[in-house]
Image (cartoon, rainbow, N blue to C red; front, side, top):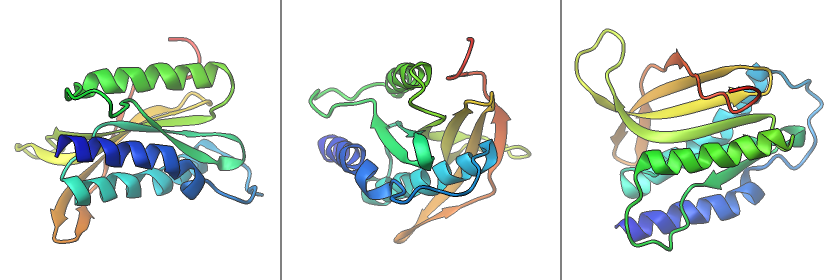
Length: 172
């Protein structure tokens, strides 16, 4: 199971940039809000597909390049038989995203993780997709999307947000 999940994530990250990137330049002026929405529209379906196929997923990243082109990044190579710790994968993604930001390759970044959270006003932990977002304008936050896998669909609950101090762009 572990190996098939690794191969599925590696395949998404290798082939998704060609299949999910916008093919025509956008005429809309890029803002942090539209960039974030574009990133979510491209990356959340990948997480949902992995949840449906495997019931979980390893953290993976996304980055917005010029003309709102969104590419995916993997923090695992699928060659190691051992299951990596999720935080190790996130740390590697953060390093790669910071390098891309420093080189002015990326304008917005995201790291998606499969987590368990206690939503505001509740007392029990539930599964969720956490999306740690950073934008070159200084925006840094995590959006949390609780979910339930019901048959062949992923049903999203009420999203909530929290401040994020990851700061991929600028001073740390």
